[in-house]
Amino acid sequence: MKSRLAISMATIALIIIIAVAVIAGAVYYFLMTKGPAEEFGGVIKIGVTVSLKGKYQREGDLALKGMQVAVKWVNEHGGVVVGGKRYNISLVYYDDESSPDRVPQLYSKLVEEDQVDILLAPYSSTLTKAAAPVAEQYKKVIISHGGASDSIFQQGYKYAVQVLTPATKYLRSIITLLKEQNDPDIKIALIYENTAFSSTVAKGAKEAIQEEGLNLVYEFAYEKGTQDFASIIEEAKAAGANVLLGGGHFQDGVALTQQAWQLGWKLKAIGILVAPTLPDFYETLGDAANGVMAPAQWEIGVKYSPEAAQQLGIEWYGPTNEEYVQMFQDMFGETPDYHATEATAAVLFAVKAIEKAGSLDSDAIRAAASQLDIMTCFGRIKIDPATGIQVAHQMVVIQWQNGEKKIIYPPEAAEANPIYPATNWWER
Image (cartoon, rainbow, N blue to C red; front, side, top):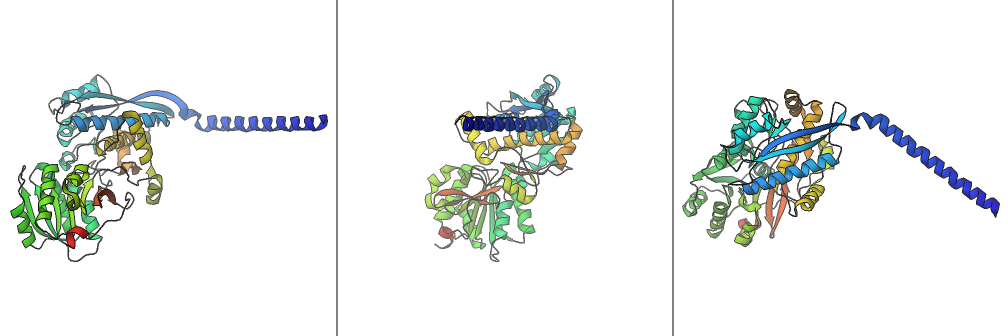
């Protein structure tokens, strides 16, 4: 009995010795291979203004929260490795109060007084246009997360780059989706609000329609505030249009869709800006909402993933979509929307550009940004090296199906197949 006990104790001792040796070996290997990158180098400052008052208050609040989620994720996952040292990132921000007049002064302060290393632009094209010249003056890279206007990147700025899809490509995903239906009888009516944003979207849509070889049979730009679309719809019907694209904002988008339904317009597809992305769209229109599509920068439920990135042969960086949504909810008690997620993507893109540059030099960071092709929970991000405009991020296309909003495009983000033609509109 004592002999067996002695053998048993000896066996246990041997196992402990082996385990200790294995752990010691692993620690030694880690220190030898990862040790240099674990040396703490300090904090990299990211500067930005956000709209916490005024016209863009809600969007600015969401953008700030999206940035804060990204900062937390990066710092909890090794920070930023530059020159063999690990850095945390911090956010330095001021309230621009949605005022383009405040923006230049605040961005000068971020550079001169706070000595930030890289900049993020404010929300909206208007405020981004006010910030970009300041970044150019100080030779600081500035990443636009909420300025969709193409014109920002047509000024010859060297240091401005963009992570969101530009306005001219807002309807391109829907037009590509239409082309993929292989329907030779598509006849498009483009009916849109006569504002700077919607007109820019329409300009890009016309280019995409022509490139895809589709048929545009009717075009009309209605004035802001228009609520009576009857005569416009009758003209489009008379032109033979069976696809409706356009809109502008929520109220006119709802009115245009509702009147098209009430006037019995037989449509194979409907793509409307902004309005269908909101739950109120279905609550207002009921069955008329079913089949309607809309472009969106991002939606909860997108299927972007490390596996999707691998299939495309590009790097994945950041939390998965599920992790991101959960982090956002845990931190703020609400769910993110695209305003938050595009801001998250801007921080992640900044981190990868700095790491790839291996330096905090602005010219090195800008050069590195031109070489990046990554996927995040926001989608794919790649810029045109010359202009900095976004070229890879595709607008997500949503479609109302049986009372539920479903992501139907692009394939790597989709959770459902598109319904084409829109049964309730086409077969009535």
